Length: 263
Image (tube, rainbow, N blue to C red; front, side, top):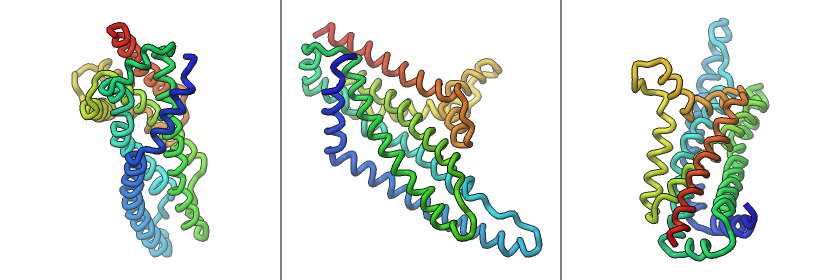
């Protein structure tokens, strides 16, 4: 693990200097901004209906946390699926195709240090991404501060934790996929398809067997992130994402070790 710091600084610098990073961020926040604008309009309409219905005791006012905060974080969790393949597709595959991995392999740096440096750079970028998403609950607070439609901040925190864990697990999967091939497009496709399957795995009844069904639910990302979005912080959900990341990084490490031995 020693020696990861130079790799971390190099990768972080490349991520924050790459135009593609800012293009991805801009597109995601543009999409999320349009969706959030529609959410706010619908919430405003529901609130007006509640005010009119409340005169007769018929309508319950909508909950800002449910309608806006949770909904916006669910959308952002889905958008991360399309963000990660772009960020990770060249982190290892490009090194292989350009020949720089061979240079790294001849240095006294282990596979663990290489992966740790790259992964921590991705996590740093992910934390920036998560912090920037707080603009949406802050907008909810600003718009609702006069009429009492305020977000529940513990739920906002729980949703942020969910995003960070999801980003970390997806980033590890993307690094694993990038270690499999020298082609960046192939790595991106493997990452996107793999993450999509990982998400929807629990929604399909592949076999008419309750045990298999429970396993499907247990290894599905959606089932674990949904608890965090609801504000339910369970140790099993934290361990799921952490162990998943370690598992994918372990496979990536073994893949790089096998390539180093062939050099």
